[in-house]
Image (cartoon, rainbow, N blue to C red):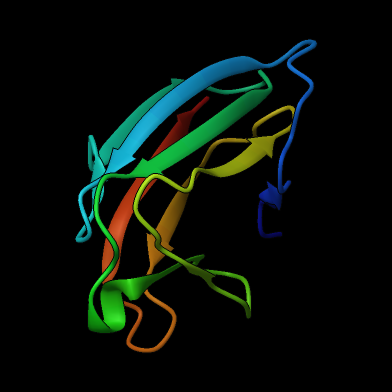
Length: 106
């Protein structure tokens, strides 16, 4: 079974979520790999400091069909509820080039 990552645009609640901030440097998330413990709920905010370029102009979760445009200073927010052990990879929308990952350890 694939773990699921729910994307929430403009998520405003932080009740019960551990907040994690990441940067995106137009090529990858910074840090590129984030490791966290399982069975917690997380709210991630990825903030690009530049517009994405070419294939790397979009970011998507590897197991989804849609991508989001990477625009300077436009945060991308998402949550993982009750995170299962898994490696959540971020890739570009067209060539699936790796941009980063979140590793949830059990």
